[in-house]
Image 1 (cartoon, rainbow over the protein chains, first blue to last red):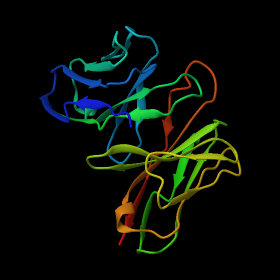
Image 2: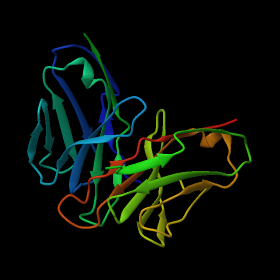
Image 3: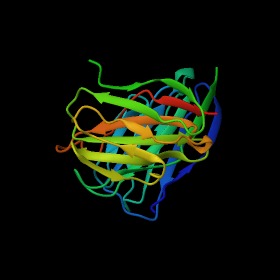
Length: 113
Length: 115
């Protein structure tokens, strides 16, 4: 089946540093989503991208839908301790009611105060 | 403002027992999903449902049964639990139509341990 390659698997950074993670696939996606999961909780949607080339921000988070529609990245600027968690990318092949999400395996972010 | 709720949050059972995990959503979303989350595998889709009385298999359906008699409920049953089904299970839902139909909303998870 389709797979998303998410990297890096984990990151251990200092508070204040910027973070970058990405997802790539051999398949073309129509939607890219980025989720954050904190310990003991379910994933929560951070950013949704619907058009190739789209760049969207949510506070200190910025995500882009790659031009080829096969990749997406998420940047976090000036990280803080509450950014700790696992970040998942997800791609949807179809539009609307078509196509379930395919998830990357996650990037585990640790932030040292 | 309940959104999507799962129960139980934690469950310990023995091999061979039947277990049912409950999921309830208050948004009237058409689609509901069950995922399992394991180290090294991320989130894997077990079953999903597009509407009441419509269900379909996901990536890892073996050993699981679902039903959807009402739009708001989507229970997941392990008919004879095995140790390999020890996992964290997440229920999720999304709308049928509109711009944001790709966006899933997750419950808080049910942690199941099979001894």
